[in-house]
Amino acid sequence: MGGSVITPLNAAMHAKAIDDPVLMGMVTGVHQFVPEGAAFPYIEFGFGVESPDNTHDSFGSATTVIWHVWDRSRNPDTAHNIANRVAGLFDHQALTIAGHRLVAVRREQVLTVADPDPEIRHVTIRFAVTTTETT
Image (cartoon, rainbow, N blue to C red; front, side, top):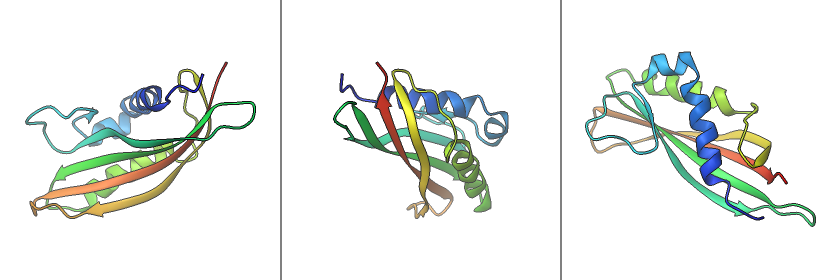
């Protein structure tokens, strides 16, 4: 008991994202490891911080997960529209995580990040995810 939720959480979020036809119509892919030369726009995930959130009778985690939207477009709305779709998929929504029970997931922040390349649009979406282990 007391195992990490990061891997099953990433798998659950990835599965939900690629199962959404609207999101998949907006991006070329959802990648944990972005392939060399990936076409824009795409989403990168797999970044986070996990902290124990145990009680006297259960193991739990408070996890911060960050997803990145990358776009090369003169229209800044494209990356924001993708970020809004990602936020809508997870914010206060159900999620099945192997070996864990979802307590809550909420969007904490959407941030536009300046990139050294002025042609690149980069938006991050930060989620707070609270889980407990199932027995």
